[in-house]
Length: 571
View 1 (cartoon, rainbow, N blue to C red):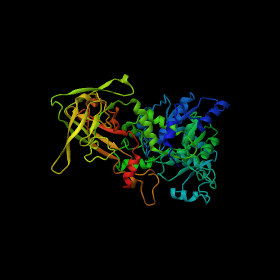
View 2: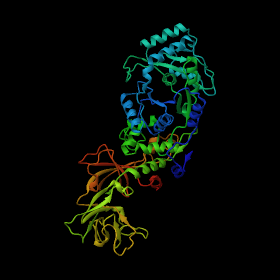
View 3: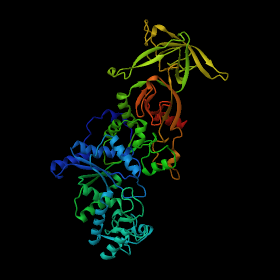
View 4: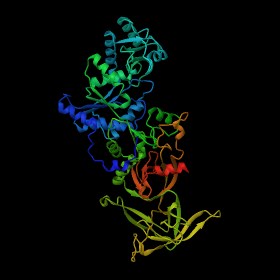
């Protein structure tokens, strides 16, 4: 279901996380003395892609629990598939976790740290008669496994003896067989109603270079086998995972109980689903590989690197994860809640500036041609202690083209022929003449100013309804501005009709690049610095920015833009 009560959720947030069912469980365990040790969690990503919003929820949960209960949280890379994993992904994951505000101290582990122990445990299962080498092909294994309505059948190799299985398994490790020739399977129950328990694979042959162990191994353990043993070896108390692993819990328990080793508790929670985006790693990889986006850190991507480049503060992301909470049932969160959290944070931290993204020139004809005045504007209106920025005013200025209407409707309170408006912290101006080219296109405005209105007021205190932002033509700075909207033009891009790809739902207007003009206070800002362009939104200096060519990304608008996008798609 979609939770449309974004404002209610936002207004009820507090610094302290609510007592969700997982925290309640941990507190019961602590009160009962069941743990007999410190609360110990882990964040276990597979290094086969970049982290996204869903991972942020898991990071905040696992590291957050450890922080709240004075426990420990490991960072463990489940690196058991050398075909899809790389050091690039490992480095990116480490950077993302640190950026989000968490530290694993000296507890950085890899499943590959345990390859030898995992192998020894596998031999133990063989000697116990709980595992065997199967020589069926992958297709045959799928056929023998059966379905939800049809029980599986035993493999003809299921009754191999212990010595034969040990010999074959050791020869698999020695590299005697080709990929796919054999697999090691658990001997459990081919008639189990849980398909995962129908003799699951524990090891497969994969002659590929591993990013840490190089070519020392040519057999690799399966995720389900590796994960529970890694938890056990690390002393994890609460193994938290998302609901898609609920059926895997039976295998998690079987492996640890059969081996007779320390047994953490697996608990499942609902994964994050959020409107207007996809969080499937497979789909995100497809977007990158097909160059539908500019890379993993494209600001339209829901990856943590993309959100960071867009300018989303880590504090806002942690706030978002706190607000959505942890539940047992799946639900979908409105993207607007994330935008709300970003605005809340940036409103309190981002300095202000003025910029024009679709410029229209204004000539103030009664202002001296060679004069420049400097106005002091607060860097942050609610925090006068943060200081001021100095903004120049000259005879020629730029305003937003949309702030002028030649045939203005009654409730249009901005500039129009004969109408007076306030220039932010400067003067009142009145439009006297509209300049046009030979085709009738508006090229500029001739205005006059009231010298008595300096700073935005007049002796007669007349009421002016419209206030415009502006920049001085004599001192403004040209910049590239990247205006981002949702990557998909539908709220639910994960749910597509038959014979339709999620790629068909890509929003063609998700990126628009314009050449804007800004006041000189933006000069010298470093990549990653964020500010508010008044009346336009929050913007962040992009990594591509240089002193000669400043580049700004729109982080978030001043209000939700989804309704505007949805309306445009209907037209």
